[in-house]
Length: 73
Length: 491
Image 1: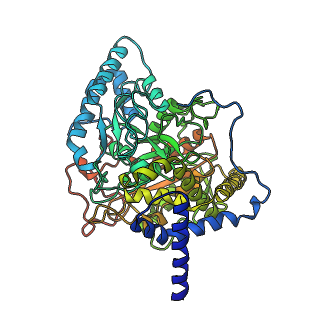
Image 2: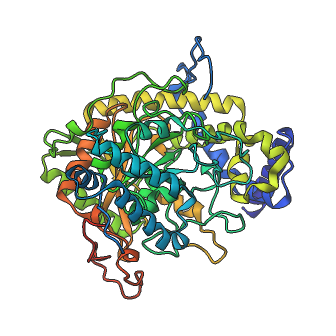
Image 3: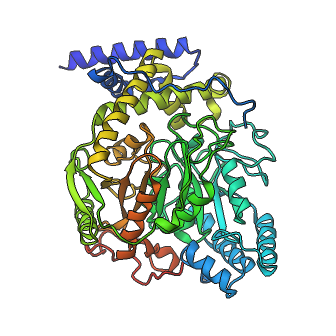
């Protein structure tokens, strides 16, 4: 059990460091450890969105208008 | 302390009757801020001179026979995420470029001014509406007026504190995962998250482009209706804005719940560790609504865990997109709670984000079905009262959010309102949450207003206003509603 938890944490830390690096973020150790500590929850959230079978043939709610507004605020 | 009308509606009646001037009212709320702001951390920037000038203008217009409506001459505060021409927008952060929005009004602010509202200043939030209170940064730490050693809820913290204490009569907040409804709940006021696209976000610093809403906080649902009437409507400057006919929200406030079918959600809303008073108060609230003609039926919110997951993926990715340029160069200028929240967005993939938008669509379809069987869905806003600050000025927010149930409704775009339903055993506010169909704020407000006509929880005031000691958990009665028994409709 403990070995599995340690393995998960090691894997989480490697993932977090790799993804932060890919994004170009220079997070300190404290920040990395906070992200690692919460990574299991984030992974669960991501798994939850992929677990919804009804999404299989549903279009995503990504909306834009071809006639884009001429200006932003 | 000077008497201040207890609601926008009451103040408007007095202004119209000529028994109160806007200058008198504005002076009184500014004096209240003089007395309480340093202790409660409500304002980031006050616009006293501008506010008094606007109040004088309102009085002149009224004297000349012009009546711009209920908000004419009424003091309103603005969360410091929205631009107002009087001063800079900070988002309670060292990072936001002071030039952003300088000299301009957000559309929501423009609309309030157009109906004569008096803008009193910019209000505290959590950094970029997603961090945590951070005493190491040069901004006020907002505190709950019901008990100063507790969190007022966020991120529209100052917006709720100021309404609860009479520093203004209504305010504008934003809500990405509960940021209007949570502080409304914890501070004992009413907060409305409008349908996505109903109120313009132009001129508002984004937290998450597709989850953010701009909406009102006020003492009553009726006041929220007054505010929404001014705020709602199409804005070409906001790509998310919908050209939807805006109904007469006040006309919908019939005082009746006859025929209203309320779905009652309990499945996800009473985890172990919930405050027992939350269940008791919730059941009492349902009894009140049934007594007024509503019918209730048990329902379960569809795809609950997936919707929460999708909201987190969406908020993370969109927040990361906005902040990445500053995170690359100014990481240490952010608070650690903010960098934690935002940088989680680097840990989700593009495909995860798109899949979250497919979940959003599925949830919308399922809710549309459910909301043919019922008209509204009721739950507690949270099953805990405000949480205490820790000695380092922080709090256990991760634990607290196990008992807060607002985030689900940001994903599909539906409107929701949080309104007082009683008190915890320690005298802290608890809150009822009602959600409805997209663009059907009229029904949502009608139900909330009817509930408030039958109850008095929303008129209770923090002990801070009556010079009573803050509640002591060791001595407080377990009876709900014991806090500030001297409270009246006057702030």
